[in-house]
Image 1: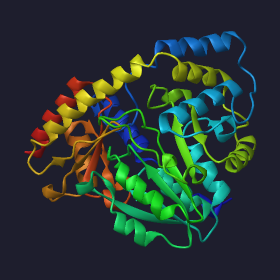
Image 2: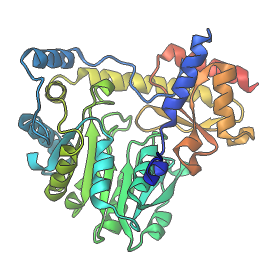
Image 3: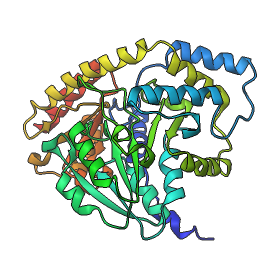
Length: 386
């Protein structure tokens, strides 16, 4: 029996494929420095773990409401209202297992064949994957290194058509670590405000930034609250990748539709993880601040090291925990470099072209590893480059 045709439109995340290859080399006795997976290397904060354990002991092992526990949704609404400078309530919040459902479900609810979706390239591969899966047409907009990996707004403007039904934004961004400047966000809002479309604002790295000003959400722009889906969650900010806990904040009519998709797929998000998330959101934030400070230290040391290697150029990212190094001057393709670093230097990183055609000529490193290992990786790359 053959798979349905739509399955051929699904893409994968190269990070997991590279991780498998790196683990295979380790099984052969090779020493590999893992800079491929976008996962904080810190433990989940202790008070969050204790809240999850208490929830299990208290019997939160059964079904919960499909959109999430009311007290958790209220806390999320309060947090988003406070941090984004907007006014949303519990009815705007849908809790889901991880962040990806808030890419998948709104796209399934809104897009049809013939619709167009603008998205960043290089960008998180699941955007394009889900766009194609729905039958809509992906419209990649190249990110410009000279603009801090933000859009060329003239290209963005020219790409808008009557068929544009969604725009995907991601700031801080994966894979570049770039931030969309507030002025650019305002311009994008001006360009789309009167169009019949929705903005998918992926803000999963919203707490991990190194600038004086927090990243700006397009939902805070005049007239944009009812046209925006905010994607956020707990994996990156609280080192909770394995807990599978995310949420979307969106217009109420769309939240109802996303709730229907939840009923038909996962029924609900695990209740005990939601109570752990409630403790994360409302409890002490010291661990988040310490983690971000350590990421900043690693970023500074690692990027400075890469910039001493002939033929390499690495812009210092404004957020997330990724370094997107330009290796065009080496004269080698990004896949060739990434493969050679793994097989010859023992440094596992990702081919930038795995994030879209405009990522070719770059390699992505996740500096979610110890400072010592990052400096060792720089030494290995430098020796290999010679």
